[in-house]
Image (cartoon, rainbow, N blue to C red):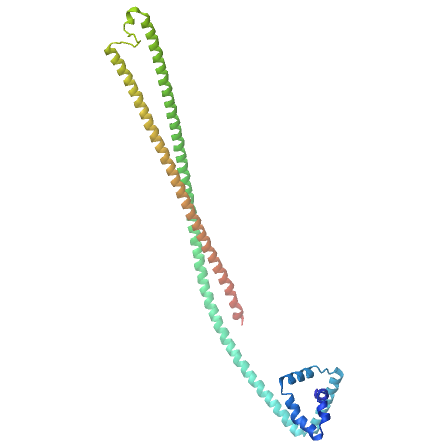
Length: 323
């Protein structure tokens, strides 16, 4: 059907060669030269492009189809019925054998599929049992983790309470120490003022006594010409001794106060060090508690993911069970 349209184009491309050749040359051209020409790749590609570019109208296709059907019907009518029946019988036998082979293949495939499904079902059941066991273990671990979390929270609350009490105690000690220091400072200030007042009063009394003695003729001999007091050695030594004793007493009280102040400062420094140590312990414990919480959260999240993945894989066995 297609060669009827393609042959004229093939002749058109070989028109010049055919016009130059005689009858025997034309026969030789179709037998030798034309096939040899289209063995080349470029010529063969051009020939295929020309063949693909041939457009056949639908009406001609219908016409060619009717002609082919009429030709086939005429051949069937001219054929011997016995030969036609034999050929038809042969075709039916081949079809029957092919169908039997396909049936055997399908039966074998069905048996293989059933065996495979049975194996998959057994594996799915085994996996389901394993996943159920893992789920139970995960639930048990989750309960244990929750108990551990509650215990850690209780311990944290107790530690917080202990820290709060220690801080309150340390603050009370600091306040107490501060009050004692303030009190000692006040006492030292009062003693200094008192000492200054006593020194001023003693000086005034000495000036008064000196004035009265100088106004008396009999007592003026006690003083020298330079105005210094010439008291008897015994009385002067006694007075110097009393003054020295009073000074020693005051110095002793002052040293005791300085010692108490130093001890108080030392206690204050120890209290501050203890507070810093408690703050450091509190920070360490808070970090440990936070790490424990993070670890518990991570374990819980992994357990939930494992359980969720197991539950997502377990329903996949149900379609196989239905088969």
